[in-house]
Amino acid sequence: MTPNTNNNNVSSQVPSHWPRHIHYLREPVYHSSVPEALRVFLLGPPNPKSAGLSTSRPPVAIRSISDTSHPAHGQYGLFATRKIPPHTRVIVYIGEIHCEDRPESDYDLSLYRSQDGVNVGVDASKMGNEARFINDYRGICAHPNAKFVDERNGETGRLEMGVWSGHQGIKKGEEILVSYGKGWWNART
Ligand SMILES: C[S@@+](CC[C@H](N)C(=O)[O-])C[C@H]1O[C@@H](n2cnc3c(N)ncnc32)[C@H](O)[C@@H]1O
Image (cartoon, rainbow, N blue to C red):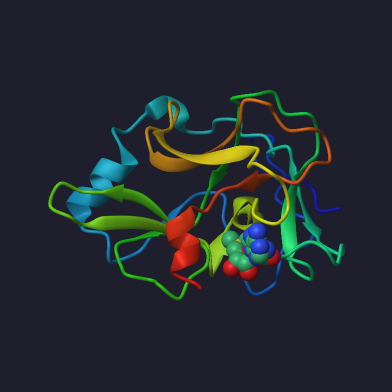
């Protein structure tokens, strides 16, 4: 096992099943398409207390899906490694923050739209964290058990996309499932 060389309690290892061709991120990366003023807004006011914060591993595991009745069979999904109470932030969806149109990406979430109409996305197609493996609930469960919430992080001040459990919480071992939204599916069918 690789020793933990960080000052905080985050393991330096990438998670199990992490694909070799995808860059694993612990912090978002800001693409050159994000204008400086927007970048400053997204980052929020500097918070000296956020340096060296202990950010433990989220209670999730990436697993390959071998169940042939699962619509994402042969791919991966994200599963809870312990019971997650209702209305709890599970993980942050980390990726490349950008202001481009990326219709080809299946890992691109809309984070923010500025007053002058600039769209900011978080794209985890080439780089990201475990949250990129969250599947949509359709064909798997009657309802999603989690949702994406755009929010400002109370510690770092960053605008980011949190993944929160729903009103029933998530059982240990259960797949974490959101709704990508009808628009997402309509654009692909
Ligand atoms: C953000 S990725 C989710 C992680 C993906 N399963 C993986 O292994 O990389 C989105 C892709 O997952 C698959 N997917 C997610 N939810 C699905 C569902 N309910 N039915 C069919 N495919 C799904 C689709 O291929 C979709 O393009």
